[in-house]
Image (tube, rainbow, N blue to C red; front, side):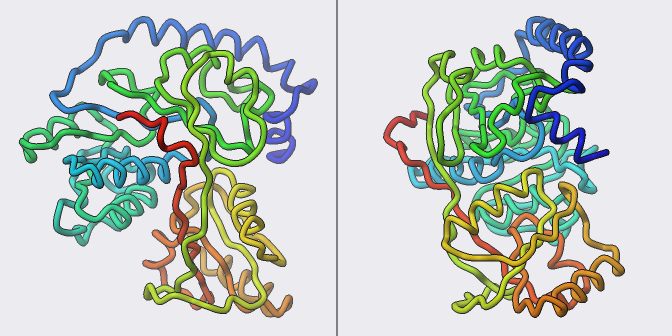
Amino acid sequence: MQNLIENNFYKKSLLSYLLLPVSIIYSLILIFRRRLHSKGFRSRCKIISVGNIVSGGSGKTPVTIFLAKYLQKQSKKVAVSHRGYKGKFENENKLISDENEIFNFAKDAGDEAFLLASKLSGVPVITGRDRKRSIQILENKYPDLEYIILDDSFQHLKVQHDLDFIIFNAIGGIGNGFVLPSGILREPLSALKYSDYIVFNGKGEIPVQIQKYNKPILRGEYRIKCFSDKDGNKIQSVGKLALLSGIGLPASFENTINNAGLHFEKHFRFPDHYDFKNREIIKQIIADMKLGKIDLLLTTEKDFAKLQFIEHNLPLAIVEVEFVLENKEELRV
Protein backbone atom coordinates (compact mmCIF):
# COMPACT_ATOMS: atom_id res chain seq x y z
CA MET A 1 0.00 0.00 0.00
CA GLN A 2 2.85 2.38 0.94
CA ASN A 3 4.60 1.77 -2.40
CA LEU A 4 1.32 2.44 -4.24
CA ILE A 5 0.93 5.81 -2.50
CA GLU A 6 4.58 6.78 -3.10
CA ASN A 7 4.40 5.85 -6.81
CA ASN A 8 1.33 8.05 -7.23
CA PHE A 9 3.26 11.00 -5.82
CA TYR A 10 5.54 10.85 -8.85
CA LYS A 11 3.05 10.26 -11.65
CA LYS A 12 -0.44 11.42 -12.46
CA SER A 13 -2.81 8.54 -11.84
CA LEU A 14 -6.38 7.75 -10.90
CA LEU A 15 -5.47 7.98 -7.21
CA SER A 16 -3.75 11.35 -7.57
CA TYR A 17 -6.70 12.79 -9.48
CA LEU A 18 -9.15 11.43 -6.88
CA LEU A 19 -7.19 13.26 -4.19
CA LEU A 20 -6.82 16.45 -6.26
CA PRO A 21 -9.88 18.28 -4.80
CA VAL A 22 -8.35 17.93 -1.33
CA SER A 23 -5.02 19.21 -2.68
CA ILE A 24 -6.69 22.26 -4.23
CA ILE A 25 -8.36 23.18 -0.93
CA TYR A 26 -5.06 22.64 0.91
CA SER A 27 -3.21 24.80 -1.66
CA LEU A 28 -5.66 27.68 -1.17
CA ILE A 29 -5.14 27.49 2.59
CA LEU A 30 -1.36 27.64 2.10
CA ILE A 31 -1.60 30.61 -0.28
CA PHE A 32 -3.81 32.46 2.22
CA ARG A 33 -1.40 31.57 5.04
CA ARG A 34 1.52 33.20 3.22
CA ARG A 35 -0.46 36.39 2.67
CA LEU A 36 -1.60 36.39 6.31
CA HIS A 37 1.98 36.07 7.59
CA SER A 38 3.57 38.63 5.26
CA LYS A 39 5.31 40.22 8.24
CA GLY A 40 7.23 38.47 10.97
CA PHE A 41 10.01 38.87 13.51
CA ARG A 42 12.97 40.83 12.13
CA SER A 43 16.42 39.81 13.37
CA ARG A 44 19.37 42.18 13.52
CA CYS A 45 21.33 39.39 11.77
CA LYS A 46 20.94 38.46 8.12
CA ILE A 47 18.61 35.46 8.00
CA ILE A 48 19.19 32.83 5.32
CA SER A 49 16.52 30.15 4.95
CA VAL A 50 17.32 26.82 3.31
CA GLY A 51 14.15 24.93 2.52
CA ASN A 52 12.07 23.13 -0.07
CA ILE A 53 8.54 22.78 -1.32
CA VAL A 54 8.91 19.05 -1.91
CA SER A 55 8.17 16.61 0.90
CA GLY A 56 10.93 14.14 1.66
CA GLY A 57 14.64 14.50 1.08
CA SER A 58 16.03 17.09 -1.31
CA GLY A 59 19.40 17.91 0.25
CA LYS A 60 18.70 20.86 2.54
CA THR A 61 21.25 19.96 5.23
CA PRO A 62 24.22 19.52 2.84
CA VAL A 63 23.37 22.90 1.29
CA THR A 64 23.19 24.44 4.77
CA ILE A 65 26.66 23.04 5.50
CA PHE A 66 27.94 24.40 2.18
CA LEU A 67 26.57 27.91 2.85
CA ALA A 68 27.91 28.02 6.42
CA LYS A 69 31.39 27.06 5.24
CA TYR A 70 31.13 29.51 2.34
CA LEU A 71 30.42 32.34 4.79
CA GLN A 72 33.15 31.16 7.16
CA LYS A 73 35.70 31.42 4.34
CA GLN A 74 34.64 35.06 3.96
CA SER A 75 35.38 35.59 7.68
CA LYS A 76 31.69 36.05 8.47
CA LYS A 77 30.27 35.18 11.89
CA VAL A 78 27.59 32.57 11.24
CA ALA A 79 25.32 30.27 13.26
CA VAL A 80 22.77 27.61 12.28
CA SER A 81 19.27 26.96 13.57
CA HIS A 82 17.67 23.54 13.08
CA ARG A 83 14.31 22.29 14.27
CA GLY A 84 15.90 19.16 15.72
CA TYR A 85 13.27 16.89 14.19
CA LYS A 86 12.64 13.75 16.27
CA GLY A 87 15.30 14.90 18.71
CA LYS A 88 15.08 15.45 22.46
CA PHE A 89 15.16 19.24 22.17
CA GLU A 90 12.63 19.79 19.39
CA ASN A 91 10.19 21.39 21.83
CA GLU A 92 12.78 23.54 23.55
CA ASN A 93 15.56 25.77 22.28
CA LYS A 94 18.99 24.42 23.08
CA LEU A 95 22.47 25.26 21.87
CA ILE A 96 24.16 21.94 21.02
CA SER A 97 27.51 23.37 19.91
CA ASP A 98 29.37 26.65 20.12
CA GLU A 99 32.46 28.12 18.48
CA ASN A 100 34.74 25.77 20.43
CA GLU A 101 33.03 22.43 20.98
CA ILE A 102 30.10 20.06 20.45
CA PHE A 103 28.31 19.53 23.74
CA ASN A 104 28.00 15.95 24.99
CA PHE A 105 24.17 16.05 24.82
CA ALA A 106 24.22 16.97 21.10
CA LYS A 107 23.70 13.30 20.17
CA ASP A 108 20.16 13.60 21.54
CA ALA A 109 19.28 16.56 19.31
CA GLY A 110 18.28 14.51 16.23
CA ASP A 111 20.34 13.09 13.38
CA GLU A 112 20.43 16.18 11.12
CA ALA A 113 21.11 18.62 13.96
CA PHE A 114 23.97 16.44 15.26
CA LEU A 115 25.37 16.14 11.73
CA LEU A 116 25.38 19.93 11.38
CA ALA A 117 27.22 20.34 14.67
CA SER A 118 29.73 17.63 13.68
CA LYS A 119 30.48 19.09 10.24
CA LEU A 120 30.57 22.78 11.14
CA SER A 121 33.55 23.40 13.36
CA GLY A 122 33.43 26.89 14.86
CA VAL A 123 29.77 27.42 13.97
CA PRO A 124 27.21 27.49 16.83
CA VAL A 125 24.23 25.20 16.18
CA ILE A 126 20.93 25.55 18.04
CA THR A 127 17.83 23.33 17.90
CA GLY A 128 14.14 23.99 18.55
CA ARG A 129 10.99 24.41 16.48
CA ASP A 130 10.51 27.99 17.78
CA ARG A 131 12.85 29.72 15.32
CA LYS A 132 12.22 33.19 16.74
CA ARG A 133 13.38 32.04 20.17
CA SER A 134 16.44 30.33 18.68
CA ILE A 135 17.41 33.53 16.88
CA GLN A 136 16.98 35.59 20.06
CA ILE A 137 19.20 33.20 22.03
CA LEU A 138 21.91 33.39 19.35
CA GLU A 139 21.69 37.18 19.15
CA ASN A 140 22.07 37.54 22.92
CA LYS A 141 24.94 35.08 23.21
CA TYR A 142 26.88 36.29 20.17
CA PRO A 143 26.74 40.11 19.83
CA ASP A 144 29.03 40.01 16.77
CA LEU A 145 26.93 37.41 14.90
CA GLU A 146 26.24 38.43 11.29
CA TYR A 147 24.35 35.52 9.68
CA ILE A 148 21.94 32.87 10.93
CA ILE A 149 21.05 30.01 8.59
CA LEU A 150 17.69 28.36 9.20
CA ASP A 151 17.74 24.76 7.97
CA ASP A 152 14.30 23.65 6.67
CA SER A 153 12.49 26.94 7.20
CA PHE A 154 10.77 28.03 3.99
CA GLN A 155 7.34 27.28 5.49
CA HIS A 156 8.22 28.98 8.79
CA LEU A 157 6.68 32.43 8.30
CA LYS A 158 6.94 33.91 11.79
CA VAL A 159 10.48 35.08 11.04
CA GLN A 160 11.42 37.37 8.16
CA HIS A 161 14.02 35.91 5.77
CA ASP A 162 16.60 37.98 3.93
CA LEU A 163 17.37 35.17 1.50
CA ASP A 164 15.41 32.03 0.66
CA PHE A 165 17.13 29.06 -0.99
CA ILE A 166 14.73 26.40 -2.31
CA ILE A 167 16.27 22.97 -2.92
CA PHE A 168 15.18 20.46 -5.56
CA ASN A 169 16.67 17.02 -6.14
CA ALA A 170 17.00 15.89 -9.76
CA ILE A 171 15.77 12.40 -8.88
CA GLY A 172 12.48 13.40 -7.26
CA GLY A 173 12.04 16.67 -9.17
CA ILE A 174 8.56 18.05 -8.59
CA GLY A 175 6.92 14.62 -8.68
CA ASN A 176 3.60 14.72 -10.50
CA GLY A 177 3.36 18.49 -9.90
CA PHE A 178 0.47 18.19 -7.44
CA VAL A 179 0.35 19.37 -3.83
CA LEU A 180 -0.14 16.94 -0.95
CA PRO A 181 -1.98 14.60 -0.61
CA SER A 182 -2.18 13.96 -4.38
CA GLY A 183 1.49 14.82 -4.98
CA ILE A 184 4.79 15.47 -3.17
CA LEU A 185 4.66 19.28 -3.11
CA ARG A 186 4.35 20.90 0.32
CA GLU A 187 2.79 23.96 -1.30
CA PRO A 188 2.05 25.13 -4.85
CA LEU A 189 4.96 25.87 -7.18
CA SER A 190 3.74 29.47 -7.25
CA ALA A 191 5.48 29.81 -3.85
CA LEU A 192 8.75 29.91 -5.81
CA LYS A 193 8.08 33.60 -6.45
CA TYR A 194 9.06 34.16 -2.80
CA SER A 195 12.46 32.50 -3.28
CA ASP A 196 15.77 34.21 -4.01
CA TYR A 197 17.70 31.19 -5.27
CA ILE A 198 16.67 27.78 -6.56
CA VAL A 199 19.26 25.06 -5.96
CA PHE A 200 19.01 22.08 -8.31
CA ASN A 201 20.82 19.11 -6.82
CA GLY A 202 21.95 16.59 -9.45
CA LYS A 203 22.24 16.11 -13.19
CA GLY A 204 19.47 16.34 -15.77
CA GLU A 205 17.01 18.83 -17.15
CA ILE A 206 15.53 21.41 -14.84
CA PRO A 207 11.71 21.20 -15.09
CA VAL A 208 10.22 24.09 -17.06
CA GLN A 209 7.70 24.56 -14.25
CA ILE A 210 10.65 25.68 -12.09
CA GLN A 211 12.42 27.73 -14.74
CA LYS A 212 9.38 29.88 -15.55
CA TYR A 213 9.72 31.83 -12.29
CA ASN A 214 12.98 33.38 -13.56
CA LYS A 215 14.86 32.89 -10.31
CA PRO A 216 18.66 32.40 -10.24
CA ILE A 217 19.30 28.65 -10.43
CA LEU A 218 22.38 27.19 -8.76
CA ARG A 219 23.40 23.72 -9.89
CA GLY A 220 25.33 21.30 -7.73
CA GLU A 221 25.74 17.69 -6.68
CA TYR A 222 27.06 15.45 -3.93
CA ARG A 223 30.62 14.24 -4.37
CA ILE A 224 32.24 11.58 -2.23
CA LYS A 225 35.20 12.91 -0.24
CA CYS A 226 36.21 9.58 1.30
CA PHE A 227 35.06 6.44 3.05
CA SER A 228 35.82 6.17 6.75
CA ASP A 229 35.30 3.70 9.59
CA LYS A 230 33.51 4.43 12.86
CA ASP A 231 36.69 5.93 14.32
CA GLY A 232 37.17 8.34 11.44
CA ASN A 233 40.00 6.42 9.77
CA LYS A 234 39.94 6.49 5.98
CA ILE A 235 39.17 3.21 4.21
CA GLN A 236 41.05 2.62 0.96
CA SER A 237 39.58 -0.73 -0.16
CA VAL A 238 35.82 -1.25 0.03
CA GLY A 239 35.27 -4.83 -1.28
CA LYS A 240 31.82 -6.24 -1.98
CA LEU A 241 29.24 -3.65 -0.96
CA ALA A 242 25.70 -3.11 0.28
CA LEU A 243 24.03 0.13 1.30
CA LEU A 244 22.21 1.01 4.51
CA SER A 245 20.09 4.15 4.86
CA GLY A 246 17.09 5.72 6.54
CA ILE A 247 16.75 8.94 4.54
CA GLY A 248 14.03 10.79 2.67
CA LEU A 249 15.24 9.96 -0.84
CA PRO A 250 17.23 6.69 -0.82
CA ALA A 251 17.59 6.76 -4.63
CA SER A 252 19.77 9.85 -4.19
CA PHE A 253 22.23 7.84 -2.06
CA GLU A 254 22.28 5.12 -4.70
CA ASN A 255 22.93 7.73 -7.37
CA THR A 256 25.90 9.13 -5.43
CA ILE A 257 27.44 5.65 -5.15
CA ASN A 258 26.81 4.86 -8.83
CA ASN A 259 28.35 8.17 -9.91
CA ALA A 260 31.51 7.18 -8.04
CA GLY A 261 31.76 4.09 -10.23
CA LEU A 262 30.91 1.67 -7.42
CA HIS A 263 28.62 -1.35 -7.56
CA PHE A 264 26.45 -2.45 -4.63
CA GLU A 265 24.63 -5.75 -4.20
CA LYS A 266 21.72 -4.58 -2.08
CA HIS A 267 20.26 -1.51 -0.40
CA PHE A 268 18.79 -1.95 3.07
CA ARG A 269 16.23 0.89 3.02
CA PHE A 270 14.44 2.22 6.07
CA PRO A 271 12.09 5.18 6.66
CA ASP A 272 13.55 8.68 7.02
CA HIS A 273 15.11 9.32 10.47
CA TYR A 274 14.96 5.60 11.34
CA ASP A 275 16.68 5.01 14.72
CA PHE A 276 18.08 1.46 14.06
CA LYS A 277 17.56 0.39 17.69
CA ASN A 278 15.69 -2.80 16.78
CA ARG A 279 18.19 -5.60 17.47
CA GLU A 280 16.25 -8.09 15.35
CA ILE A 281 16.57 -5.78 12.34
CA ILE A 282 20.34 -5.54 12.91
CA LYS A 283 20.60 -9.34 13.15
CA GLN A 284 18.63 -9.75 9.92
CA ILE A 285 20.90 -7.29 8.07
CA ILE A 286 24.00 -9.19 9.24
CA ALA A 287 22.43 -12.52 8.19
CA ASP A 288 21.59 -11.13 4.74
CA MET A 289 25.13 -9.79 4.37
CA LYS A 290 26.66 -13.18 5.22
CA LEU A 291 24.35 -14.88 2.75
CA GLY A 292 25.44 -12.49 0.00
CA LYS A 293 29.11 -12.57 1.09
CA ILE A 294 29.09 -8.78 1.47
CA ASP A 295 32.18 -7.21 3.04
CA LEU A 296 31.12 -3.67 3.84
CA LEU A 297 27.94 -1.76 4.53
CA LEU A 298 28.06 1.80 3.19
CA THR A 299 25.93 4.25 5.14
CA THR A 300 25.31 7.99 5.07
CA GLU A 301 26.71 10.51 7.53
CA LYS A 302 23.15 11.30 8.60
CA ASP A 303 22.50 7.64 9.45
CA PHE A 304 25.84 7.30 11.23
CA ALA A 305 24.80 10.21 13.47
CA LYS A 306 22.48 7.63 15.09
CA LEU A 307 24.35 4.37 14.43
CA GLN A 308 27.51 5.50 16.23
CA PHE A 309 25.61 5.60 19.53
CA ILE A 310 23.94 2.19 19.13
CA GLU A 311 25.59 -1.09 20.11
CA HIS A 312 25.94 -3.26 17.00
CA ASN A 313 28.54 -5.18 15.02
CA LEU A 314 27.69 -3.96 11.53
CA PRO A 315 30.79 -3.63 9.27
CA LEU A 316 30.11 0.01 8.49
CA ALA A 317 31.88 2.37 6.12
CA ILE A 318 30.65 5.96 6.31
CA VAL A 319 30.32 7.76 2.98
CA GLU A 320 31.57 11.30 3.58
CA VAL A 321 30.15 13.63 0.94
CA GLU A 322 30.23 17.33 0.20
CA PHE A 323 27.86 19.47 -1.81
CA VAL A 324 29.73 21.04 -4.73
CA LEU A 325 28.25 24.05 -6.51
CA GLU A 326 29.01 24.20 -10.22
CA ASN A 327 28.20 27.91 -10.73
CA LYS A 328 29.36 29.33 -7.41
CA GLU A 329 30.19 32.64 -9.10
CA GLU A 330 26.44 33.34 -9.33
CA LEU A 331 25.98 33.11 -5.57
CA ARG A 332 25.57 36.40 -3.67
CA VAL A 333 25.00 36.30 0.09
